[in-house]
Length: 375
Ligand code: GMT
Image: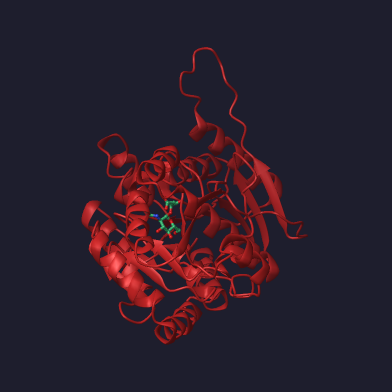
């Protein structure tokens, strides 16, 4: 199939997932055209079946807000026409679903039907999409999609309760490439970051408010008061500076490293003992799944779809949002008991196998075939 994938190019989960999906589809022989305003970060190697088209948004003194949505629709029309795409798969509803709808309408006038599938990822529904200023366009463009998918059962239910959805929502969960995300021996790296055998905790996110990164720091402070440990903070975003300041105030800077955005995440996860995900909401928690695939147990909140992947008392522990005391207690419970920690590491990997990329990609392919058959 010739498929257009529209996504955000950044380190955010929806862009990562979309890129990994496109790469896996290309490996299976499909022709994939990525359309975005920048080269997606995980699109890092040449593949004969993968193409990338940049959306450029011409500016004009009149534009306080350059119209990305229009530029994207026009680019879609162009790529679909010139490359003979059969199907569009857009990730993150805003504004991708409405741009796809517009492209679809323009092409209909020219006698071509280009079906589009919208995958809902999380904040496009739970945070931004609900905003009155977006809600009607989001509802309309989701309903006009030829198929809708959500990355967890929780996100499906959230969508149904917040929007007037007239179509079936297929749950196709996030997945992980276990060939890439697997524990490898990086002892030299561990010795560098934790020279005295300290335990290593890690957090990966885009440092937005919804991630409650401060809970990671406060929990770590408590754990650190009991055992020698180090914290690796990976990623970047609006809360990073405030978090660095918080470490200074708490006097924990010596044991916390802010590593910024990292390409070789699997190498860092390979030396991590515990992954922290205290989010106020998480439709799925792809970062936690990638950690689990590298045999890292997870201490997380019980928000949104996280309980669909992190199993309390098996692959890690779940607490109420903001319950730092329990997060610290559970972290210590694991980090001070080698046998238990080893068992949880094994359980984390077993759980991650259930979301193996090879199991999830055929679900998307089947949906594409169904959509094309009905188009
Ligand atoms: O986590 C973010 O804020 C990024 C966001 C995105 O859409 O880029 O991630 C969402 O999509 C991921 C991939 O499907 C999910 O694993 C994340 O749980 C989800 N984030 C939230 O719901 C907050």
